[in-house]
Length: 218
Image 1 (cartoon, rainbow, N blue to C red):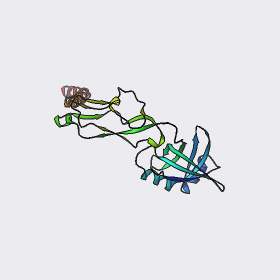
Image 2: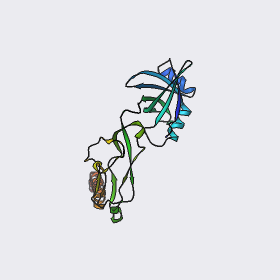
Image 3: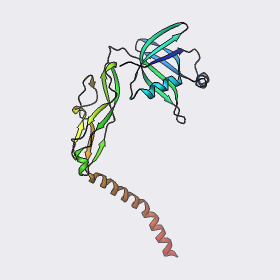
Image 4: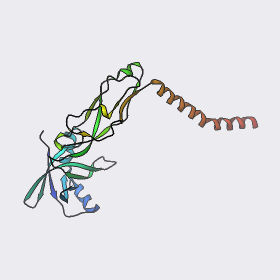
């Protein structure tokens, strides 16, 4: 699969003031680093970076990063290691690019996607997803966008664990007995509702007694 390409320029200025100026000009401050590379402060186009994130579905996207310094260019394969997001405008404030080697293993968190409608839900059971990501080790080119887990055969009380998942390429690092999804009996939900009703009644009891006392005094 062809990797998206992103152009980055080296930057000299650092600090909050300089970062604000860059964002006002339509750029995002960034940092490039890796196990065998010195950190390099960069700036990238906010529009181009956002376009890559929106176009490439899933996480762990590999990017061909073209680093320009003066009249020279240096291309590296990177992953987005971290993004700082503005909590109000939901725009990127800063990003970390981590260099990877295509022939060396990486450790990543991959989303888990449940597929199918469990048999148990047809009898009133409730499907609960316990784990939403799984940590795996694989080559960068083999990183799956997600791991599909078929839950259609689950009956009430049945569960799927990490040991039930098979990867074509790569190794799952999570404990094999970790539960991915389970179908719980409907009584579990009813019990939860009953507990909430009891809690509400207990909370209202002091107020009711106080009101009763006031009426007696009158």
